[in-house]
Length: 124
Image (cartoon, rainbow, N blue to C red; front, side, top):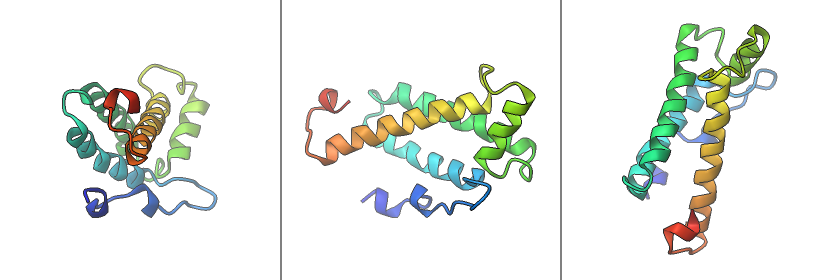
């Protein structure tokens, strides 16, 4: 299946004991999900895909400013909290929050489909 040949999977990410989720691996796994949205329906999922990709890019923009300092998602969030910008529109922290919501939505939708739901509207 499409999922069995994905090059980057969330399940392959190794959490760092004290530091958390590695940013680069997380972003690679997020980017690997984008083609799934096209397969599900390029028209129906266009807004979801646009939001998803936009949030990935915001986090990536923060990450590439200092890859060593921001090597985990937790370090990005802590940096923005300490700088007082975590709740600012378009912050990496806000993008991560919306990306998490998008991933939960996608997981819920795919679970409904996996469980046999044939109607897309119902599954959504």
